[in-house]
Amino acid sequence: MSRAASSSPFAAARFLLSCAQTGQLPADRLPEVVLAGRSNAGKSSALNALCNQHGLARVSKTPGRTQLINLFDLGNARLADLPGYGYAAVARDLRNGWGRLIAAYLDQRENLRGVVVIMDIRHPLTPLDLQMLDWARHRGLPCHVLLAKADKLGYGAAKRTLLDVTAALRPYPLTTVQVFSAHEGTGLNEARQRIYALLHEPPATAPPPETLS
Ligand code: GDP
Picture 1 (cartoon, rainbow, N blue to C red):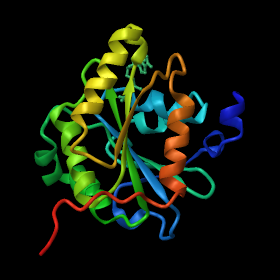
Picture 2 (picture 1 turned 135 degrees about the vertical axis):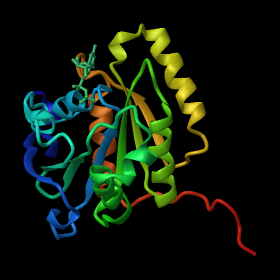
Picture 3 (picture 1 turned 90 degrees about the vertical axis):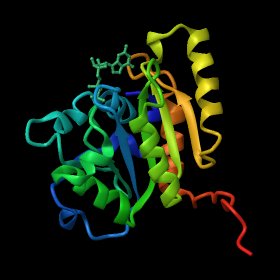
Picture 4 (picture 1 turned 180 degrees about the vertical axis):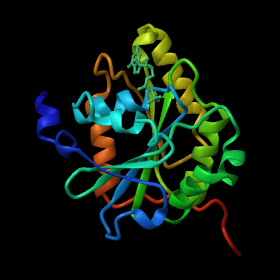
């Protein structure tokens, strides 16, 4: 186990529970950060790498749990793993079963402090990713984007994508972005620090969208 992981709360992460209804969520005030991303973007691998535990995210892939919100206990905080969004429009998904659960969690969960959006660095900023960022901005929640599988690109191409995505995210003032590779460990500590800050530091405030007269 690396020094950074062993000295961080992520190393102690444990699966807590799977929620099918928001009523099953813990009724306390512990801060939560949610992990979201398109199916196959590398979300499970990112969770395992962040927590330095190879099997941790397996629960999120267990049949019967893939459409639930899976919570992971970090001691005095939690990570919430959302089902990977598919190729159908989020708006349509939100109208039916599991989508309603996610919408209720995202809209109403007061414990929520921030959103980590995992994107495949080769296919960033899909319409569904943008919907997630729009929703977070609407709620005033900070976001952190992991451009995952960075090892799939050369250094120069990864850097260019980082710059392009950073520029594209200018309309999202509470959003930060980094490159990440679960396989090679690239950006692991940066991601841990950012998620820790989302969980435990007072939120930055975005400039008001417009001045009311
Ligand atoms: P999820 O569906 O978003 O949870 O994605 P997974 O974590 O299951 O990853 C989907 C696929 O991408 C799997 O084949 C992983 O091995 C692969 N993958 C995930 N992270 C990385 C990475 O950092 N580098 C590379 N090269 N492949 C990765």
